[in-house]
Image (cartoon, rainbow, N blue to C red; front, side, top):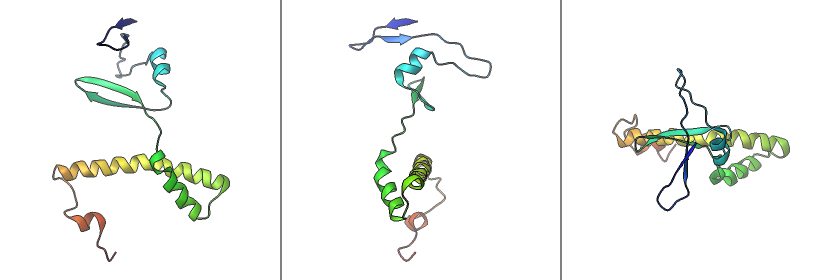
Length: 124
């Protein structure tokens, strides 16, 4: 492992790792622990580099609304907890679908043509 100084920051730790024939890598334990990886990472390309970072299960933006809705349905105790966890897991995929639909619409490839196609009419 080597350290590389960056402008005014803490040294960046670098390590060369091999890539398997199946394009797999093993994240060094020091890196894994230092960034707090749990069960998932997200991976994207930025400035010609592959960035891998831990997925933070926040979802907190919708927690109060989810709980209020489930309580209004009469749920409590373990049933409330189980349904809350299930509903919370559905938030991220739903947001990702909305973002993809927005991207398609911005590129002019959306399947819906107007406001009513997306949201329905006020009479619905």
